[in-house]
Image 1: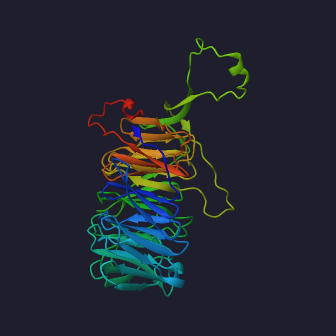
Image 2 (image 1 turned 30 degrees about the vertical axis):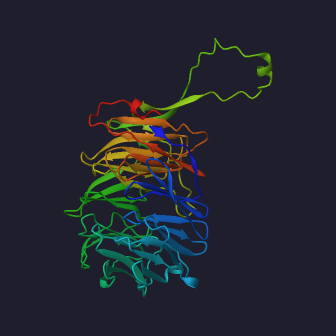
Image 3 (image 1 turned 90 degrees about the vertical axis):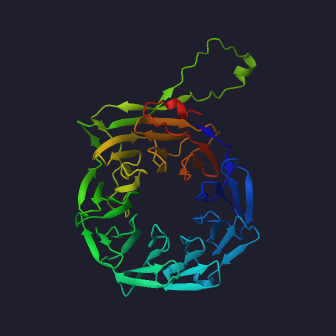
Length: 461
């Protein structure tokens, strides 16, 4: 792997959907760089510190959320002189997002008083009262023709279907939730999944005309759903729960066909490979070295012993590190907090939040555990390569960790004091964006060979 130099950032950073550009927030400035050359192609100055950025799907426009002001500013890469500013006055702006056509911006006011659709083509605005959430509760169809927006009125949750062409409400229906948490269209646009707050376990599947196709409730007592995700192929719906189990539903019958547990002890028989991150001291032959007396006396602080980080394959049974959440505190750190599908829908990775240093990788095609990665530190982020079966994760250390069906690898980032706290793939899988607390860099990722027989040397810097 090849790494760029580190560059300053003070907020969000992200690739454009077409993978050609990187947008970086540096205080009041929005810096646009080319992905290949890293050359600055545009520099925009905002009116306040940038809290949030989002690219339009066509990669021509980009919006900046200045939530302290609060206002939205939008910019055009092809017309640098063009500007757009959205200010809702006393109502404020809690969140903003692009519509699929890249020519409308949807803003949600503070306290969820209203959602407004702003047109960049003219001065038309469309208002929708009482949106359920600021950043959640809105989902677009894959073809970009319709939007499902959740609202709440008279102590009842509703789903409103809007045309993304005219922004007229095509229909609305009440949903059987006590406190709706979020909503998501299926990848084939044939169904809508809605799930309730953690206080009540309820997952509901609706058709676009409002018919309830299936109601799923795994249990009644205890905290319920924590994470939900459709597989990219649309055939499976994964539901992660606070009971530390992953359940997978089929789109044909909407019945559960897999219930995957995350035990603290993994026993045999187990076909999964267990990779544990370990420190290996570097053995240096220093017998030939000779230092002068002056240098030896002036260097009292001896450097730390150098280590090489690698994965060691462990035997089962093995006890995994876990943290028991305190019973008296709210929002316990347990349950499936990370849930992500591979691009081919064969694998899914999960993290049980009571075992924050352990990542589980499941093979859904064979309904078995494929691998377990045991890290030294808390897993901050995990992301699948959008083009092949390759998983990358970070733990706030100076290393990047990769898993493929062929094995797992540790890659050292050759930048001084650069610790990876977050990561993102670009859309063609050729580049990774790595974030530190106050800087970022990019890594060129080698293509995954078609043959499964290859060496981890491909990933060494």
